[in-house]
Amino acid sequence: ERMVLEDLSLRGARFRVFRPNRIEVNEILRIRFTLDDAASTEVAKGVVTKNVVGSAVGVAFFDPQADPILEAYLAARPV
Image 1 (cartoon, rainbow, N blue to C red):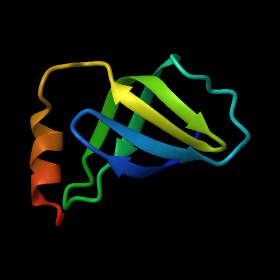
Image 2 (image 1 turned 120 degrees about the horizontal axis):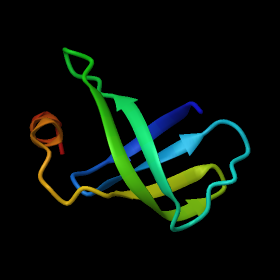
Image 3 (image 1 turned 90 degrees about the vertical axis):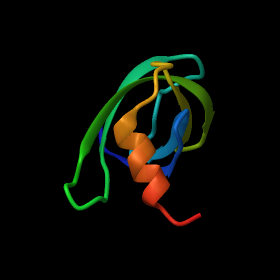
Image 4 (image 1 turned 60 degrees about the vertical axis):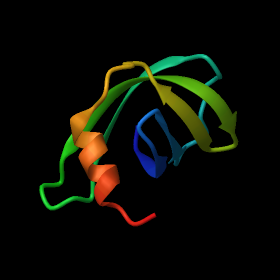
C-alpha cells in the first residue's frame, strides 16, 4: 500500500496512508520508502507500530543497530 512519509528519525518514522487502514498498535510491518537525496536511495525497515491516529501511523524501527544511510541523510538535513 502506498504511503507518504511525514517524519523520519534514527529511531522511527510517521507516515500517512491513503486508504482507510486496519493497522493497529503493536503490529509488526515492513515499510519501504525512497529518500529525497541525490541518489533517490530506497530504504526498507522492519517496524513496530506505536500509535495510529486516523490515517497517520507512528512506528519505531525494529533494528536497534545504527543505519549509516539514515544517519548521513538526517545529518545533511536542515534542523
